[in-house]
Structure formats: C-alpha cells, structure tokens
Image (cartoon, rainbow, N blue to C red; front, side, top):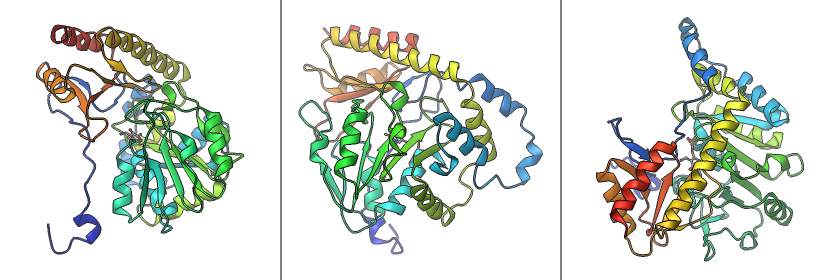
Length: 352
Ligand code: PMP
C-alpha cells in the first residue's frame, strides 16, 4: 500500500478472475469460455486485415459494429453502446447511473464484479438474498430513484427468470434504472432487448465473450433508450474515447453475420449441458437448472473445495467460490462433449 492510495482503493477487494493456466493441455472449465472457435469468417477477417491501417486510431463510435448490432436486434443505432468487454460497459454504467447517494439493489449471490464497482465508485449496495431454491425473487426488488442490477441468467447459479417477470419489475419501478446483465442469455433465456422500446428505465448488457467465442477480443455492448446510451457515451468519452480496437470492431461485426454457426454452437452447448446435468444427477449431485453455458452443482457427501482440488490434480479446472451459502457448489463450464466425458469419468472414479 502507498500513502497515495485513495480510501476507496485501500479497502477495495478486487475481483479475482478464474485461473488462466499457461499450459494448454488442461481441460479448462472454470471461466465460462466457449469451447468452440469464433465463426469461421472471423478468421478470414483477421487474416486479410490491412495492418498498415493500425497507425490510425480506430473509429471512436465503432459505427460498423453498432449498426450491425442494431440490425441484428431490429433496433436503432442510437439504442446501442459498445465497449471493451461487458465488464467495461458495466463499469461505465455504474459511473453514469448509479452514483446517486441511494443504494443499488442487487442479489446477494450474483456476479461479484457488481460489488467491486460499488466499492470503487462509492455506491451503497443493498444485497437481497436469493430464495431457498437459489432463485431471484423479484417481489423483493422495489426501489425509488436508485438502481437495480441482476444477471439473467444469474451467475454463478445459471438460473433464469422470464421476460414477464422482468416486465412486472419494470412496471413497478418506473423511476428506477434496471440493468439486466445478459452475458449468458443466448444459452437458453429470453432477452429483455425486446422491452427496451417500451421501458426507458431498462438497460441490457451483452457480451461477445461467451456465445460468440470472442473473450480474447474484449467486446461488450449495451442496449437501451437513446438517452441512456448518450449517458454511457458521455462517461466513455471522458475516460477512453477509443474503447475498441480495429480488429475487435471488425471481428465482432463479422461474427454477427453467421447466424447458422452461432445457433449451431449455442444449441450444441445446451444439449451437452443437459446431458452432463443428467450424468451429475446420476452421481448424486444436486444440479441447479441452468440456462447458461455452465452448471452449478453440489454433492451432499463430498466437499466442493476438495472435489475442485481432486479435479485440478486430474488437469481439469472448475470454479469454486468461498462465499458463504455457495461454498458447497462447483461451477462447471460446458466444454466439448469429449471434455465433459473426461470430467464425468474422473468424477465416477472418485464418487461412490
Ligand atoms: N457479466 C457476467 C454475469 C459474467 O459472468 C461476465 C464474465 N465473467 C461478464 C459480465 C463480463 O464478461 P466480458 O467482460 O468478458 O464481456
């Protein structure tokens, strides 16, 4: 610690991402990456990229990508924001919208970055426990003049809520900005983008890291009323007016063009998820119903941390959280069928 650290960072507990091993022969099921490569067209775009253009700044508006996203979701470009991964988009949203001196409502168990941003930006967090089935109960979320944030599907549980529930929440809290983080929505939930034209208090964030296999590129986006997007642009331009590099803009734009590849890989992950859930159930695990590209599972007779270590020794990485209430669970990313069958084989030799 240095005497120059501000009080906010002195007490800050930074987010720790899952281990990114330097060796490649591990089965990596710990950070919810997609096991399949990005759409083939992305490789062509990168191969054919004219590197002499790199001396120029990228388009600060990332217009091509915003236009592509607007067409993809059948909305207007003024309803689209893009940033360097949805982590950055969320950070900018916290700065732009949640610093009102009133608490931000969020589930107690959710993506832990939300709490880190609250600490960093001096925002009070009002954390609402999940119910006994690890579900978000939207009846618990009523607030005036502040914000509500949740992930749908939630992380790390994988459990999704319906669009009807989100709409009820929006109607009940018209003076409150509701931010729905849809990082995993393409694996089985319905997107609230369908509601942005009706609800000016709704902001929806997406990422290219999961369903579009571009985690290494760092591309995220948000959708909402043009006034909300203008607020995000204002903060972005005061912070880093060029959030996306040229290759990221070109690659993300290209990935939107191959709907068949996108649907095929998402559906493949969903079917692997259902199969693995069944096999884990057969081994005695309690598996939460997941709409995401990961599953959250606990075993009544085995300690989750020890199981994580056992799998680690077998070169299989899964995620364990030490947070009270979920420390008996493992979060397992859905990999290829071959990877998942190695996981199941390893568990079968250990669990009796
Ligand atoms: N939201 C949730 C719920 C996540 O799990 C993640 C990935 N860790 C993100 C947002 C951020 O993803 P990215 O910054 O790669 O877009």
